[in-house]
Image (cartoon, rainbow, N blue to C red; front, side, top):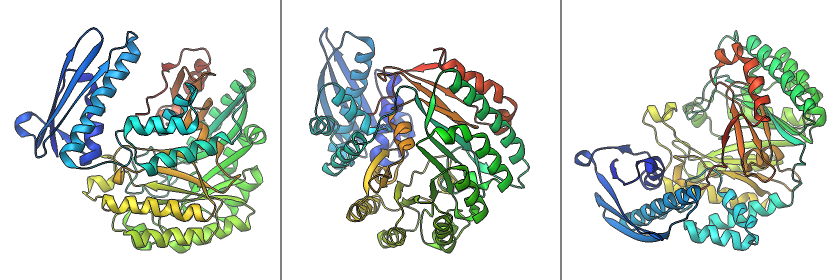
Length: 490
């Protein structure tokens, strides 16, 4: 849909289009004469308050007016101003379309942050969840999910002041999934892998030196990607040997095997012998036709075999991923995949919702996810089935353009929640990340400030500039990184 937006604050355009996309999917910006929908925002400001009216005209018709107080503190005033416009637009579009997104007016990645912020202000967990629900108009199901997740997280040990989460990235895959928009490339003939591994090992060593100098220890280590097991056995062993000081410190070590077609018994033994106890084996779906359609290039049989090999290799903490909303799949197909995964009794299951970004092959080919109402049924079916089997939701994040305006949720049996996932997503602790495109962040003790240091994304540039990446991590602790306030969650 083509949308024209007229607002007195041009700087809020991106955030306002995030609200529009909740109702219409990916939209394009247009001038009034070419638009199917026009949004006009008008404001009147006094010393103490701001009146804002949002008009929606064209294919749909609706309006909403509100009055917000004006804060004397500039950053708080900008936050309130943006929220007023976003909520006004949300209400106008709800009135115009009759659509009520399950997450209400929330567009941020971390809805749980809003709950934590309210609790920091002195509210109990139920009061904090109620405040978020009332402010942003969440459905009862999503409010309940937030309450469950925060309750589980509160029962887990928090990182000590000298503990950090560590990440090692291997941005290569056997093939590129057609829904993927993340930083990764195909391994191809493998010629880049030795050179990349050499650079990565150098960065790992530099990070370990930094931690020793500053008295830091690893609380968790996550080796992700891409697909780390795309590395041949000798290179995989080289990376894990370089990371041994981190592995020996960490309470939890994960290797994201991910693609079943990259898993061999030899690689599993290398991972297990290195000290990693947690592994992911990610089928995404248990239907071969869908796997072929999305470019996974492995079969359901390979997923089952990889899982059994992981058990035989001694892994006692296995996560499996599924995606709700894959093209061509209906509720019965998703239920079948879920049932097969639960029949394997993994310790954790992560249920993703398909997010079609413009960078993905599926989007460029004009393929769309399953019907949005159907995706909501898939997500709710998974929640109920996992709950019956004793799994608890322990972390959540959202992305833009998610099918049905849903979310990604990690579920785990009690005692198997992934500490790294929580620390990374909730900004609970400092993260030191290694590899092309990896992002390190320093989190102040009270989370008043988060400093970020992103590694270069281009793999060739990374390999030639790895010493610069190490220096940037050191700069984080000198307070000269890229300083930003904690990201807004609404």
